[in-house]
Image 1 (spheres, one colour):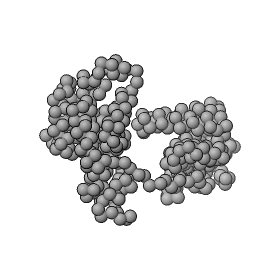
Image 2: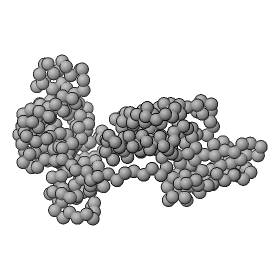
Image 3: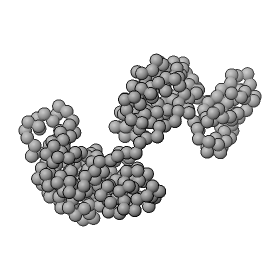
Length: 360
């Protein structure tokens, strides 16, 4: 690393990471990463350097102080701090998944502090993940471990990034499962008079995820406008979905039969549905309702002779829209996915499909 000039803030790049360093008169050299790793961010790094240098000349403290506690921070403490820093940035479910993956990483390596993590330990762990999971899972572990390392660099717990240069793996083309029009009709006939008929119809005709169905409230259904609003989404972005006439009729009947007219009442509340047996209502407190719903769908699939599920219902919505010629951009807006995800899943189902099809 270049030696900083006296009382000047030096800017330099080491590999793909930008650093600033300084040597105060009579003091020790200090250095920190700017956390800018993209070659396209050279201009941003130089602009930030000017701001920091001006503050440094005014005598302000710009380098993070390393306390004894921070220097001794264990890997577990670093993980807890990193997970907490992401609490307002991701959903609770994603937060739990990230925490689980990082704890698995900590248990698999010999390092006991963030500054002890080596590149070989990271590579060995990722090879272990890949041996029992897909390439996509490998990439997800790499993403969260790299986030932990860069968080530790920003906190001053280490100075180098052992994940730099470890590339993501090219994943195989995702093969989605969806129902044909005939199979969708069979599912609707089999569930129309059941306790989950309206819930399954909403998944098939509106493409909602399982969590979005459970979070749906009466105030989110606009019967006059024939639209449905998804407020609590996996991506934390609200969206509106038009209601198909068949779904509209079923939702009207379902809302009329509901015993709770409050606007914030859940549209679908299978755990307290009066049509369920007393045995289930007593046992529902011992575990998540989702387990009962999954068993219900498994039994439904056995009766119908083909596989069903919430993801299959959701993909059925997108697949049939693509076959009808609806633009991929519109499908992405209704499903709450990125246009690129919809292109990867549904572009080949369009009649005008080509490898270079655009999202429009």
